[in-house]
Image (tube, rainbow, N blue to C red; front, side, top):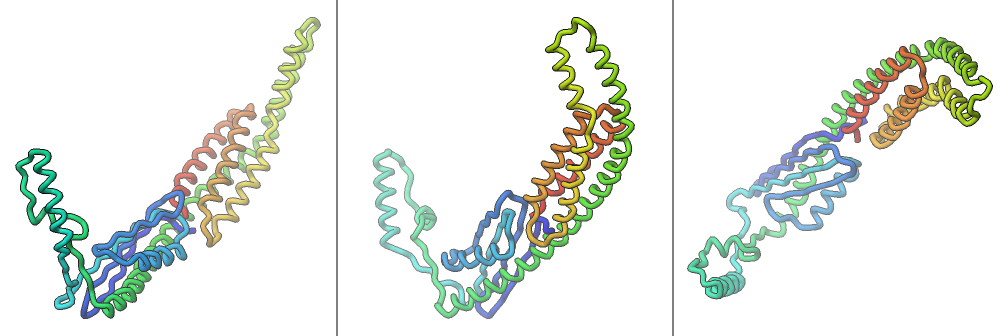
Length: 291
């Protein structure tokens, strides 16, 4: 079991550049990867980054930040696209005239526009940078997975404590069922005697009998609840992502315990049902962050 929350970073350094990869993950219904970089990186590199992450993380939102710092004299070479800058200046100047504005087009305006400034590094340095990026990413990913595993174990221990408590309360509920059934049978007998009066409306009698039959016995619901509980205990230790499956099992457990609560004519059973539902809700909160 793994949490969807984690953080890690990886660093690599050479004569040319210092590189740092920072990665954080939070809970999310699906896998979402967002990559940011202090410098534009080739699409092929970003594609490889995403692939490496997908191999290790199956669910959660992943925020990945790449920080590249060049060292002198290997700073990126800066090039100015004069033609594009001139074109921008002419267009903006005409726009000012058309709108009758007194604004002047300044150098800072032009430098902020796309394509006016570009940077490049030597091919060999780029190749080394790609290798460094992969190494730094691997380190960051390893640290993230380590943290997600650690938090996952903490979630598992909490869930197991709740399950132990639920199982204890379910045993108490099972012991109470015979007493509750006996009490219900006596009430049913009294109700039937009151219904079997000459002249009593047949439709009313049929309706009341239907209600009496449907209430009181919760043995089947209890067995199904126990079955789902066993399935949950089998699922929890599995290594693959189990968050979605656990949520489905919790829905089934919730359905059965609700039915038990609705059918039971016993204060003790009703109280145990409320306590079990509270523990199921606590488990559901834990599972929100499980991969």
